[in-house]
Image (cartoon, rainbow, N blue to C red; front, side, top):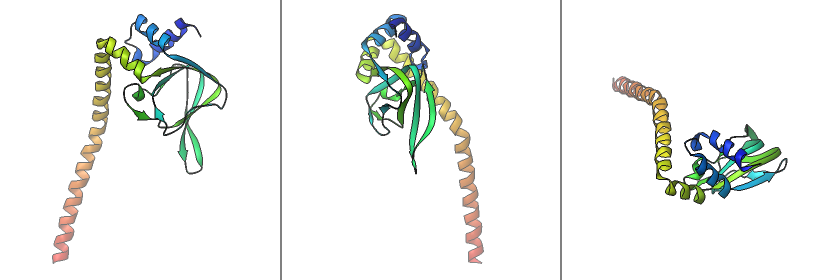
Length: 169
């Protein structure tokens, strides 16, 4: 795949969409291009993640360990970033990934990505803002659940008071 095609794919990744073309060119040029054959393992569940993988061609099967072995939870294709969190911090792979047919990826190591955002602090600021918005959305989505939990606790407390007063009669 050409450098121009790699840049076009990287630009589609939400986490990288604010990068300028010259920044994406530097990232694509400095990252590793790798190819996998059908059934070849990209990474194992629980393995230390040292960065992200961008699928530039093909399909990857994501699998989680279940009671009877591994079960496919999703299939992802071109333009997918696997390991977004691993670009920013030490983490472990949450699942196993296997190539379905021929797969090409761009491997972006965390050290390279950190160097990029150190060189371009405005990128770090935009990434911070993107993650902040995601966390706020998650909090907003969880708020109704928290409210229901409070209601349940109040109902349980009222029930305990009733049960205690019946027991003492």
